[in-house]
Length: 304
Image 1 (cartoon, rainbow, N blue to C red):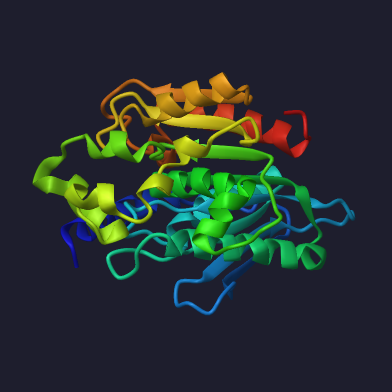
Image 2: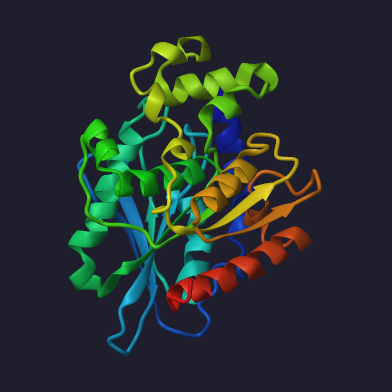
């Protein structure tokens, strides 16, 4: 196990209890349906879970497509089961996705798998009564990167051609938590134990010094493909983020420049750091969750 993977695995295991406490796993007194480890492809990691509150009416479900974080090398959908129930309780049909991780697998396999998972949603829309015109993509950390990238790939045929994928589906909204959106900016940050270079190598199979000659170097950063067609967005960032400092602010600025509706929130304390809303209980996390729930409520009602 690489150093990066070891560190991110420890984070997930350490934070599992707080992220998936009894309150987050509540049912709210209504019938709740969960299906786990549904195959959306043939790969070992190509599995997803679905969550929904059972409805008596024939109203279609808006879709919440969630991608977990973990430094591109760790993480699992099981650690987002509390968040998935939370989103389902808001009224979404939740699709909680696993995807390829480094160092065993490299970019762009993760993107290719996530497109397959997205197409699974389209293929099963009638079965689950889904509103494909009202889908929100969301993720934290590495999942925030993949969420932004997935939204761009869905909007740009040239990216689909480049990655050898196809989808006709689009997202109406994006909810991004402490993601990486500008790869070059992220790589300029110096972290202990040369962690930046190690994560890049585990993610792509190249070191920082080899980035210029990497075949996908020009399509690594979602910020390069954000345009007026990007989904309406809510961006969360930590002002003193030890991993992704400045990334959220850059995306917000770009969205404002291209005229996309964007709302945002951030923490200011060092203790409210990377992906701080996942703690659920701190003052900053509670504030963020309240703002996000308001945003998602308007997404469900198609008011934003």
